[in-house]
Amino acid sequence: MQVRELAIAGAFEFTPDIHTDQRGLFVAPYQEMEFATAVGHSFSVAQLNYSRSARGVIRGPHFTRTPPGQSKYVYCAGGHALDVVLDTRVGSPTFGQWDSVELGNGSFRAVYFPLGVAHSFVAMQDETVMAYMVSSGYVAEQELAVYPLDEALGLPWPKDITPVLSPRDREAPTLAEALAAGLLPRYGDCVPFRPSAAATENPEEEHLHA
Image (cartoon, rainbow, N blue to C red):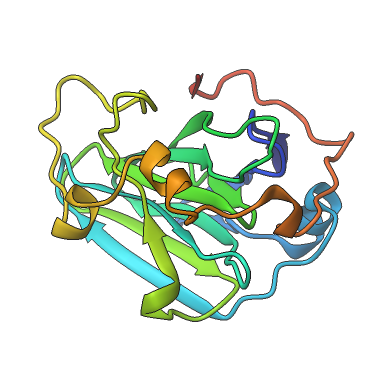
């Protein structure tokens, strides 16, 4: 498995090895030992989420009020998605910045989102399936979002899609509005992370950043 830290500190991309033979393939998108070595702690799974989206659907950016906070491990089990990591941690050196990774399309890449970092993605084709492990269960009043088309953020949504948003995401505040309302997590309240010197870069991946 190849591991690389993204431009948002504490967020990582994991690219597993794919084993193929005449029967098909086998892949392990999450591997505890490699995860803990890179991130500096294990991942405690409280819930597994699954979504299926049509082309153009944008979900997020979503994050959980911190504390208690919620970390996520996300991969695309079918289809093709552009996954976006947005730093919403007030006081972070990369606050308001983003990074992105293309998921699915045969790669089985995964992305880890630490506490306080918002997750969003756009489905690049119909029947895009996203699966993600989360560190805490769903509590509606703790779930927050920012507006995905906020021009100040400039998130990297492809120009050739027509965005499809839920009412919740369409009505979400901009990042500046969320900051003014005191909705964003503070950097100091997020779990410390340890960047890995052993994390390696995959030069063949498609990778975008602000």
